[in-house]
Amino acid sequence: MSTDFTPIGYDIETSDSEGHGEILSIGIYAPAAAEKFNYVEMRYHSLVVSPEAMRVNRLPVDAMDAHGKTYPAVAETMLATYLKTIRHPRATGWNVGAFDLKYTEAKMPYVAKVLGRRTIDLNALCSAAATIYATPHGDMKAHVIGEATNLMAADADFTQFCEVRGIAAAQHNALWDAVNALYCYKVITERL
Image (tube, rainbow, N blue to C red):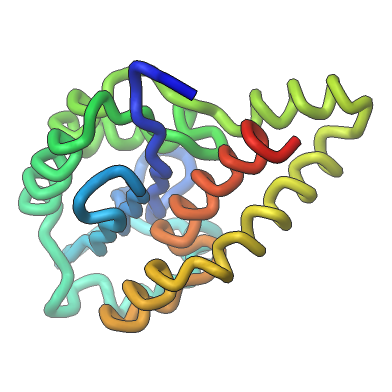
């Protein structure tokens, strides 16, 4: 399939789900890039957190200022530079345009500028597939995520990347969600 863009898995984890907090981590999965995986955890000395967001993301508040994490301004430059190596990157994910990119635009405008406004929203694709197959959206979404998770389990590069960097990749980790999103896109576009 020929396209004029490159789908990339894109996900962020935040300290608040209402848009008042900060980006805690960003995961990008771009299989066509020289570096397929990009994962950054932000370092803050103080930030506003929502207990609900922290529970969902499973991030301990006491680790937000840990050494080894990257300050947001440095992360923004690194991520924008990385994204510029990808031909017309198109952020792909669940509600990626309505949540992830809006947050990115507010907190990391340089990254948002490189990504642009066009996205691939998996909920929209899933709804279309559910309509075609006369299946409830929730059932279709569960099927797609299940198949994508099975494909991820066989991805030795992802497993090795996480092991080498000590990343506890599981659902609601930005990198895991980014990789899963692109595998979901693959399931919807190639396997349904």
